[in-house]
Image (tube, rainbow, N blue to C red):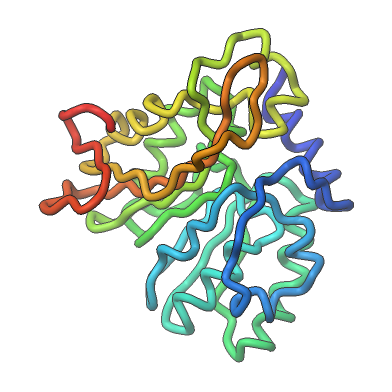
Length: 256
């Protein structure tokens, strides 16, 4: 089973017709959705809202941007002095995003979003050029052999004071090889999920100085073969945090 091909095929279809099974229920701030066409909202998939953690004036990179919903929300938060870059490998998803970008720009009165085609584990983005990397239920879709490189790429493109805010699906147990070889489960955000503690540890191993668990769903999104899969949102800072006000894994001290 080739994970990349399975993901590209399924999401190409999901860009043509909405597929509810690809996402968890997420409450987005309605004031940001008002300017976004229904096509974008209906065909965008995720398990969290990392856009709520971006700030005015920042340069934001969205990994696996799909039809662009998180990018278009972030564009309103960062405002005209900020910038948002979306990266996706699926032509059909990019077509929806690019088709709607001018509509949203006209409604907002400014254009600060661009969409690039590419693999999120091999970014054509300059070193230390991004304030915050966000992603919504996409890291799990990257094939296992490329996951370490993916986390290193996130670290590389961030400014020294930068951070990553990632919403993704994690598991409570290791996903057995049999499930990993199931293309339907992989493209459905199940088979490629990392065990929760290993997901947090992956940021540390990439060089991040601090990792905070911002949100963790109490109930699993799905339970498959006795393994619980749930949504988490994690913030990883390049620099080590001096003061910690929430559950945290500091570099070198283990994961919470």
